[in-house]
Length: 262
Image 1 (cartoon, rainbow, N blue to C red):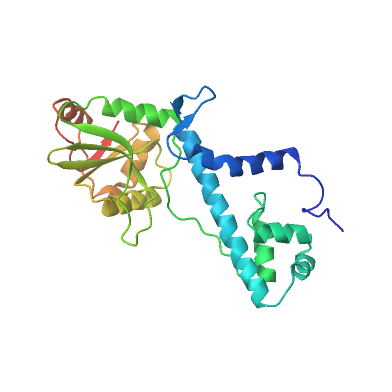
Image 2: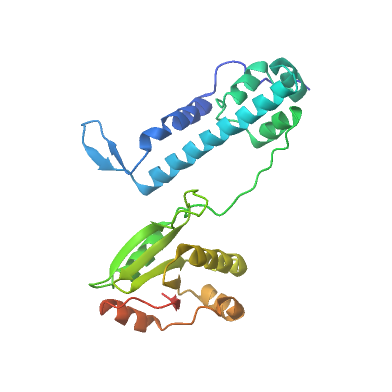
C-alpha cells in the first residue's frame, strides 16, 4: 500500500514547531538570556537541559547525514536511487544527508543507513545528570541547609574532564568541601535497581577524584526494605547515623564516606 512521502507538501504545525526549537536551541546556550526589555535573566535549569539536548540531537543528525552521503557517493549511487530503495522521497534523502531532517525517526534512519551499506547502531551511555523532580531538590536542599561555616556546598557539580579530552557529562548532586577535602553527595529518591544504581555511583566515585562519598537515600519504607535485602551491594559504604551527620554539618565538619537515610 502506498504511503504519503515524508518530503512532500507543507510541514505539519507540530513538525514546524519542532524544527523551530532545534534551530533556536543555540539561543538558550549558557545560563543567561536577554528578555524583551534588554535585561539579563537566569535561564531555568530545565530550559538549559532541553536546549543542550536539542543541540546534541542536531549534531547527531549532521554526523549521520554526512556519513550516509559519503557512503552513497563511494558506492556511486544517486539520491534518487537511495530514495527508491528506501521508499522515501528524493527530497527527504537530500534533507537527511544535509542534517536538516529534525523529525527523522529511528526506523527511517536505520533504513537510510542500510540502503547505502551502513549499519546504524544505537546505544545509550551514562551521560549528564538526569533532570530531577521537585521532591529531589527539596530533600537535597533540606540536607545542605544544615551545613555551616567553613563548609562550602555546591550543587550539580560536573566531574573533571576525561583523560581523552572529552567533556564529562556526569555530575554530583552536590559537593561539600572544606580545607581538608571534598565529599561528593548523591541522593537516591528510590532504590529500584540496586545493582545498576550502585554500579553507577561507584563509577562516579572512582572517576571524580573526591576524597569522600556520601550516598543519601530517601528514608522511605521501600528504600529501607531494599537496603536490608541488598545489604552486600552497599558494603563499601558504612551506615552512618543521620543525626550524627547533621550534627557534624552544623559544626562545620565535612561528612565522611558512608550512607545515610534522610
